[in-house]
Image (cartoon, rainbow, N blue to C red):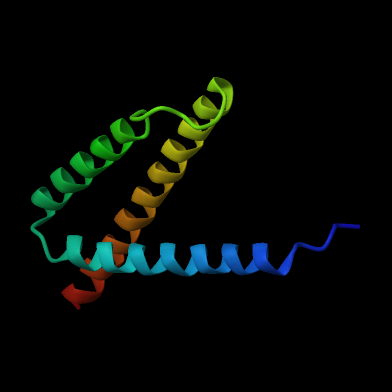
Length: 97
């Protein structure tokens, strides 16, 4: 049997999910308004800057945890960018009709 999650934790996950979805939709709409070549250049640059920023600063946790957090953050960011690309394609397709 799965343990019940603390209500505050459930609320935190729900809020993060809503914020991620809103950011995805807003970013995809903005990117869809750009010419396709400029949009891809923007997305690649954004992703590269985001990945390089994860390593900045002095970690507040031990080194192994810091590396795991960095790896997880980079993977989450890559997944988010793919979601933005897919949503951008959906928006462009809808606008073409």
